Amino acid sequence: MAFANPRPLRDELSAALPRRPFAVRFWDACHLEATEPEAPTFTLRSPRALAHLLRAPGELGIGRAYVQGLLEVDDLDSALRVVDTFQLPRLAPRQLVRLAGALVRACGLTLPPPAPAAELRLRGERHTPARDRRAVRHHYDVGNEFFALFLDRSMTYSCACFSRGARTLEEAQEAKLELVCAKLALRPGERVLDVGCGWGSFALHAATRHGVRVLGVTLSEPQARLARERAAQAGVTDRVEIRVADYRELTGETFDAIASIGMVEHVGAERIDLYAERLAALLRPGGRLLNHGIAKLKDLDSPDEGAFSERFVFPDGVPLPLSRVLRALERAGFATRHVEGLAPDYAETLTHWIERYERRYEEAVRLAGPERARIWRLFLHAARQGFQTGWASIYQVLADLP
Image 1 (cartoon, rainbow, N blue to C red):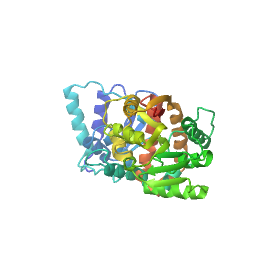
Image 2 (cartoon, helix red, strand yellow):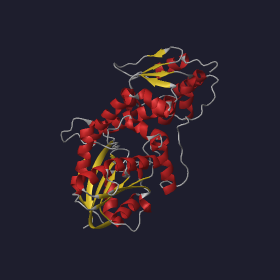
Image 3 (cartoon, one colour):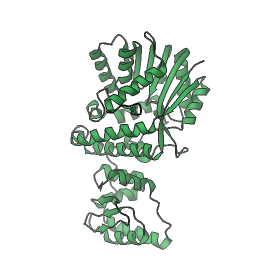
Image 4 (spheres, rainbow, N blue to C red):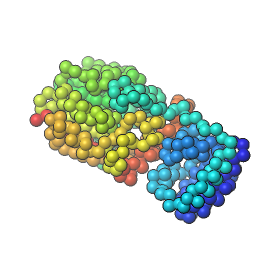
């Protein structure tokens, strides 16, 4: 950090950006004022924060600096809106040269910082079973206790349903689980597949409330262990089986209905047709499918969800447009019977998760470490913004095999 001087950078930014819906405070207390009221302040605690931006301009560099605690913001939601919407004005070549020189002076003799330890960069072909397992481990193996910090009692890690009168998160999650069962028209004695079963909330609800037999599959061993323990506590081990398995590994079995809740966004464009074909092959004639998943409404041709999520949160997790999911289902022989969008419900769900997480943030740091705790704080706020701004929605698609 020797010879680091941010003041020339502050002055050049002030001249180059006459409109600034944000303020910047540097490590030496010099300050770039905002030009708009109620603007967020980005606080750079070290020249290494700027070095991250030099090494990876844009979302990834900002994310790395935030994860390592080198960048702070006083209003995370406002800061995310700025990152998402602010457009740099057209700058003359001379201005760009001055800005570059000022940025180098601000960094001083700072070595390029290493990427945060919590960052993952997967290699090889996307969405092979082995790579999908690695991606799932990165996300879920932070631990069951960590997720319990912000999920409800049922440990349901998907959109709750507030739009039917629920007031609490617990009520809304139960309403969602019952909505899935009602749409599938489950009958006692039927065999149901729960794809991406998580901690078993749907499997337990369907077995105890509707008398069906459920096979739940997940790629996370910690999830499976807890789901089995919960089935034993509920006294339904004769009706609920939990396996650590990929949906592509299920062969020679037949089901009356399939629930896929929060799974399709992890399949990818490379495997969406195979996903639909495999689910169709597992259903008896006349069988029903409820596919509940996030779909993006903007950036439809983008190959990923964004550099930050790809490296830190959901590697290879790319929501597809709803039209692409429906096309895959129809190609596999499904007939779509009903589609329902739940974007406001997911924004409300995330608000509850954020409130719970913030109340127990210090415990999150203890369980997962400061980097992971900051990753999840940023992820939850960014996810809510995605549903509030219309970048994404979430749909339940009910289909059957005629």
